[in-house]
Image (cartoon, rainbow, N blue to C red; front, side, top):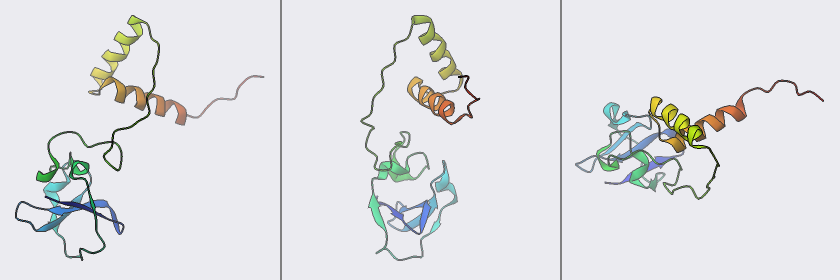
Length: 123
């Protein structure tokens, strides 16, 4: 099954159903449930990795989580933090409470921190 994206519809996937018909659906989780027939042309569509539609319940996307990158390639950037055993246990509990892998929880927490408004610093 092939998957396509369109510049005119960046929040939609266009892909084949099990019969080879082109369908369009939301990139949101579970979007396949609200699919409709694609009535546009095929020439302007760009074929992309079927893995990108994971999580939308499209049958061609598999069952794993949707990759974070637009290309489906894993990130090449790594970060190492030194932490005490107590810190690690606390972070892991918090990540589990939020239903996230530790790396995702850590990334989300760091991103939230850098976007938080800062108070005025003292000279």
